[in-house]
Image (cartoon, rainbow, N blue to C red):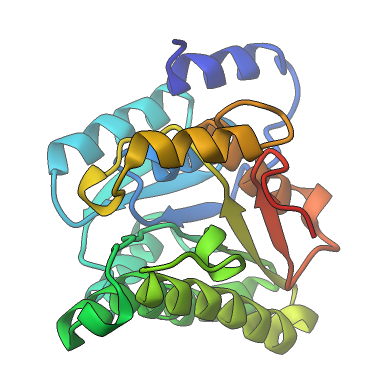
Length: 270
């Protein structure tokens, strides 16, 4: 399988002589050491954005993504931070602005998906999921918005998922957090649209990623059923999700805000 970096290098070679459209923009992508976050960060880097690669552990993995982003011609930095901590998020945004001068693209990608029936969901379970999936997105937006307002341009993207729109059983905390994430998106869109800031949600369908199978009981049957439900008849890729985010960050997304973009291969239709 072609690596993300080689794919984006090929993309750039096909655009030789053209200006990279996100040149001059600075993006933070949380949870970007692997999977969807990594693909989003590299797509933005390939189109000219400087990128901050974030995770709360595995600094070596983050550094490897930084190296890939630099190979695409972007400036990039690693920042280890637990985005459940508002002070850590504020510190990351400040470090990015100190290095690159601003932050005007914020992608909240970090997430956990806990399988737990409601009556077995503890306070700690509930708080952990909401802190990771929802509060982190609020902290990132709040820290980045002053820079976006100053530049009168900004893109906020929250990565949601099926549970926020098509609830699944035994996912109560995830359903609440993902639904809340899109509500947050709409609130930001309404409040800041006239200042050049758009906010949107991208909701992946069934995507081929590394995942904790402990939270997917009867995984083989579940995944096969979901695959059969897709109109296109295949799993999604991380690059499918990255392409949706790229669409929202490029001029193509200028008139799109407060929306949810389902990238699900037609598994769900609205």
